[in-house]
Image: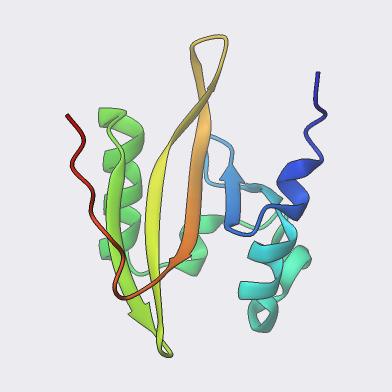
Length: 113
């Protein structure tokens, strides 16, 4: 079985929090993305204190509804897919997970039958 250290090297940014919003994990990409805010020093900080009220409300809605929040953004000439959802262990919600992937502007959309 593969170990979980591959997450550290994954080319997308991964952030995981506990139920109260405390940041538990950042992979190397996420630490780099948030380097100006402290990078790995963000571990142990509360995610809610890093966001405006509108974002805090969305995060709480994800936790309550257990439905992901999925969207794309463009910042500094880079387009990203953002996927925010709860993460679970043995079916029990443990917190929030955000995956951020850089994607091309001309991303193909394939329909398979």
